[in-house]
Image 1 (cartoon, rainbow, N blue to C red):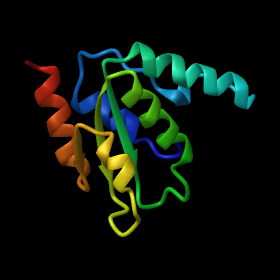
Image 2: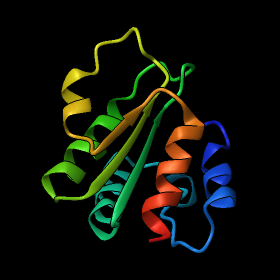
Image 3: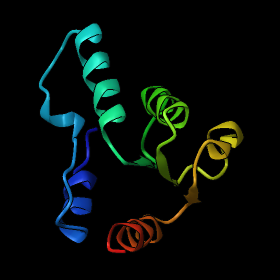
Length: 112
């Protein structure tokens, strides 16, 4: 949420509709949670990125769980290899520790 990786994804894999949680400008937890989960439901593919600098990932885990339960395709880029993410990994269709690999996989499945 604090970096600009979402902009990189949009630039490198254009011609898709992206729901970017940075765009809602909501401060109330109830409102932004509803916004996030609605857009997870509306999406076909979820691109989740756990950067090394991310201290938490709780919100991302909720979004991945919601997407999994909704039958969505989930790409999970996890740079925090040392942390235990086994359960999250099992919910995802594609897991990598390399951002470029995640981008390439997104490109492949959206340009078929």
